[in-house]
Length: 71
Image (cartoon, rainbow, N blue to C red; front, side, top):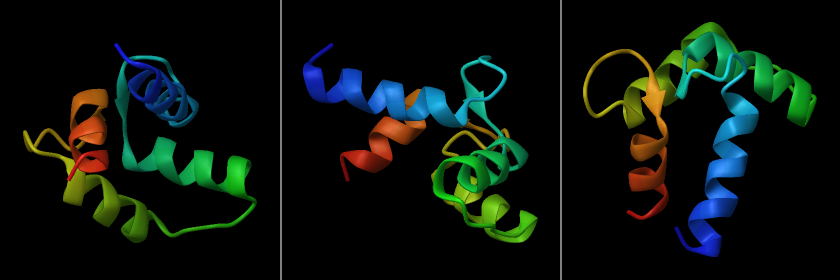
């Protein structure tokens, strides 16, 4: 893993609130509120997760996050 991927993993982990390796829309919404001090709706969070969720499980894995970062 290179330094950029390591940094990306650290960012991902800040959104993975329960540490299970997957980010749900609810985790994303809560993390945005905590980290950025701004609120987004459940629908906005769901839209973002759905746009990155390549396997259709309703959650974003690090691999999906990393693929989006490298588009």
